Image (cartoon, rainbow, N blue to C red):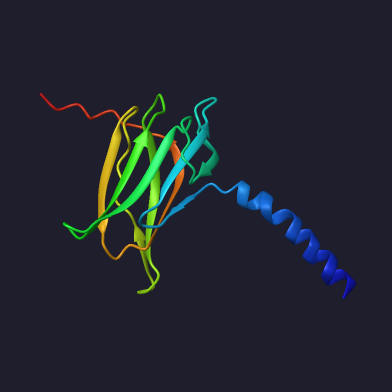
Length: 141
């Protein structure tokens, strides 16, 4: 019993650190999340995410219902110096469905808008990185 209690205390003590080191962002319709990144080097590292308005936030995610079009609108504002690429997953908890969300890279200093299905209940964004573009192949002459 003493071992179990010690293990329980250890897990309880480490859980806040695991939550703070999370590399994904979860949104529900009506949420707005402000993100800060460590931009040293060529990689991005998510430092913090907050639902509280943050003037220093580098990226802002907003998920809102559009009742006129019967869709959910994802708005991503990128204040970074380079284009932002990320992956996202849509979930419907009632229907027990999940699928990758179709997202495009967000140009530096711009706002990207994506229309998602109305069945969406939870959106998770992850794998944040600078966008990588491939050189177009040359056309034959």
